[in-house]
Image (cartoon, rainbow, N blue to C red):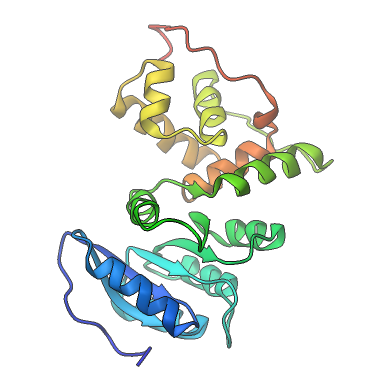
Length: 236
């Protein structure tokens, strides 16, 4: 059952792979996603190994990944998916709000980490958010990440080559602001912001927004005061 392809794909829909070892939970989420225009479940998996194999055949845009699964766990499966030729965005959903899971999932390349008690509307929004290339963390996870990274004596990551404007943007990304919120705070256009984020991804060797968040924590940007919102016509 878990290894079979599923019908109903649509070209412009967000293609989702659902990976969870609990058949009841999978069925519940599947019903929710099937009722949502713009999202198509292309495959289901009950283990991490199945998830990796099915992703290779179906090329989902987003993988909803449980952490604790038999055979290969969700974090190891995430790392394998990200290392593949057509990596999806991975949104980790778990019932266990544990620091170790959060850190390992993000370092494996996950674009988001949410708890399974999330409401249906927020889950649907989360799928579209990570499909668009943004990071998404549960509020409790974000608060603990800030506390953990600012409290540990680890080596500070260098931001050499990052411009002052890019540093401002990275600080706001680290603080969890969305693109529209950053545009409003810094009085810049959407296209200008996307250009800056693209440069940050290249300079920091980051795959996506989640890895930019990690870079921001490692650079201690979460400890700094929010960037000035005063308009500077020469800053871009």
